[in-house]
Length: 254
Image 1 (cartoon, rainbow, N blue to C red):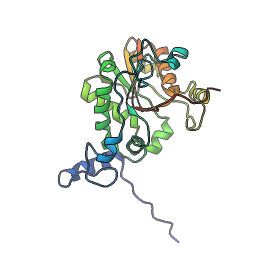
Image 2 (image 1 turned 60 degrees about the vertical axis):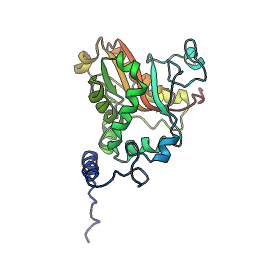
Image 3 (image 1 turned 180 degrees about the horizontal axis):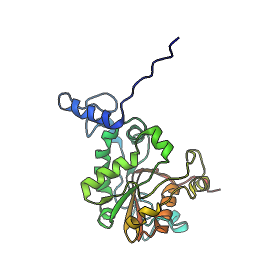
Image 4 (image 1 turned 180 degrees about the vertical axis):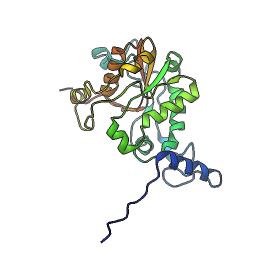
């Protein structure tokens, strides 16, 4: 007997091309199947996304109710390895769906929208940076997913801002388990030593101010591990720019 026929699945680049071609003759489609409003996000969802405005902590991008002197108590108590951070919006039930669509559902067509969000949220960081580096995936995860969502956004942000785009300057030689469900200290242990700058790429990092790009900031463990590797390779400074950040760092620390 013949086995089940394999189902062909187009890659993300082909899927995105197909959506752009259809947009020429049909209205754009939002995540919920309705006519798109605001770059593929339904109007109702868009209206509920909480965009982060100043004041915010300079160390982690956490929104504050009032102008603060210095940084938030969490950053003062345990500074991050990266210098500064900004996030476009809060990560909640409203922003989660479009981010997960980019991450897992081949919706790379959302990358230009998220890049515009980052351009606005990270104006100061962009002005003080020399190059963009996306948080990398391990090669097996990249093979499975077929694209890196952070790299898709960083590549478009590079085109919009003129900053150098260094997609292979930082690698993830050690595969790690998911960070979900782990304590803050467990997250740090999980990604310890997971990132590296290849010797052949050190010249791209040495002496440069690097802006690290990722999708979501939770405790900052992954970004800290990346920043540590970049600084070990000679980066003059490392800042962080993300699409969204969780509202609280109140994960257990033990």
